[in-house]
Length: 150
Image 1 (tube, rainbow, N blue to C red):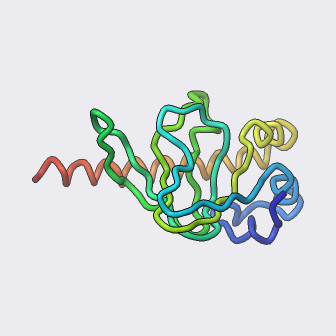
Image 2: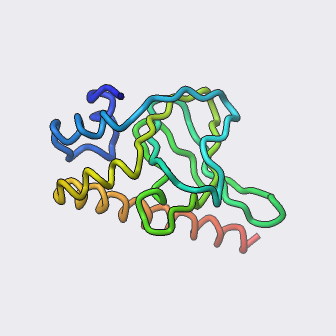
């Protein structure tokens, strides 16, 4: 179980009530990682969403023959692993720690169970997920445009 105050520090949970945060804390755990540790690998089964409590995590996509490029860096308070909450259930990118990091992992199956009991919470979280996906897609598209122009 994670401390509710630690979840409150996550940008993603800024509008979530203390009661709902307490329920999310019960299905979460804190995991320490060393620099260069892989948190999750592209195309693996997605089972958690992740929040950076400390350190930084690089988001890498496979472009061909296991060659990966970094498309984003996630730092304190930010989230990755959104694919665990959508239908495809596959990790869309590899997440690798840049520094020693502490990651808060939230069990996606249990979180979806909370959504079924509390539609308001589900809506709040899925709206944040939609905004996150939109921002990441825009940023990735700009990076690819820059690569093509070289």
